[in-house]
Length: 272
Image (cartoon, rainbow, N blue to C red; front, side, top):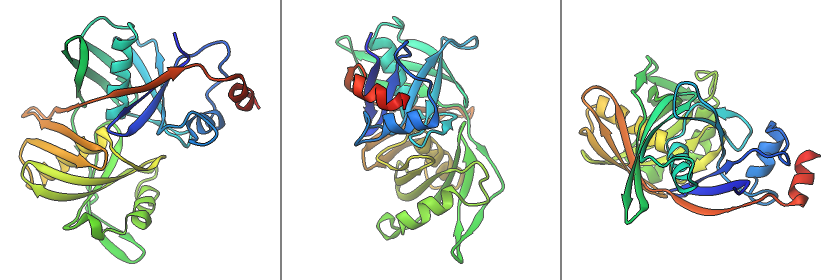
């Protein structure tokens, strides 16, 4: 079994770490170094398996700044592919426990290989925050949780958004004491929304599963889209289905990039 497997979902990449005697404890400093794209393996986060008493598998998710995330749609799909491809599960359906709730994963196989993965991301929980002030500018938004926090700002033109100023300021705004994930959304049609993502603890990301679910739920609540929505991002597209019972189902691809062992040089740096 390799010490790590690196995969991506539409360019949003994670490292699945396999604990070993050589591996130091996952402190914030260790996580940051492993995720560093120049000094480490490089990724948007780390996935760590644990034994769950409530689901088939347990998953902890760490952001590249060392903080822990409640849930990640791409992370869950990446973890599901890892479990099947590396023979930790022989089933095409299983459950995964995260801090943000239990996720049901369904694998679709074509000629024995995973074509895409559908996961049940739970339901959306909206709060009362509808407007926020940033640098004297009032922004209308939708604030909600899909197991982790999100705020969505619907805009007429994504290219006109001052993304690198507003993204981090919304993430760390006092209205969100635990920080939040930020999405700017442009309605393309009732069946498609295009978004840009400023992810909590990671910054700009090419794609995000939980962000896609949150945007679909928010835009449906606002009356902009129907129940089946394509979320388009810089990294690609995810398909979101909003069931009548409130459950949010997400379907998308995952690709493994590489697997291997951490070098002695990197391990020495991690221990120091």
